[in-house]
Length: 87
Image (cartoon, rainbow, N blue to C red):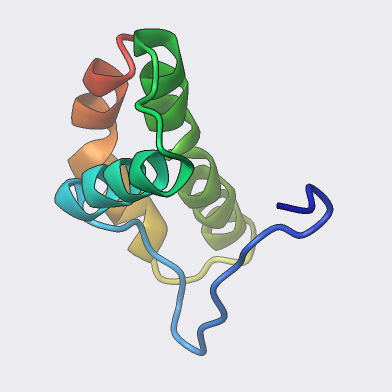
């Protein structure tokens, strides 16, 4: 895959954080697509990285005084995602 091409999902809805089970399915699908499972370190990094988009969106919500959609999702999921990241 061309490393300069980064997949993104366009949406007209306010960005939020996917449910943890969906993120787990995405990680598994990525492993299947590349025909190799993640190492423990790679899996931990994937879970830690899963928080970055929501953190960015929550920051924007705070700055622009928007509805706390991403922030609410972070509050609900951060502890479990960090535990999966062993952070």
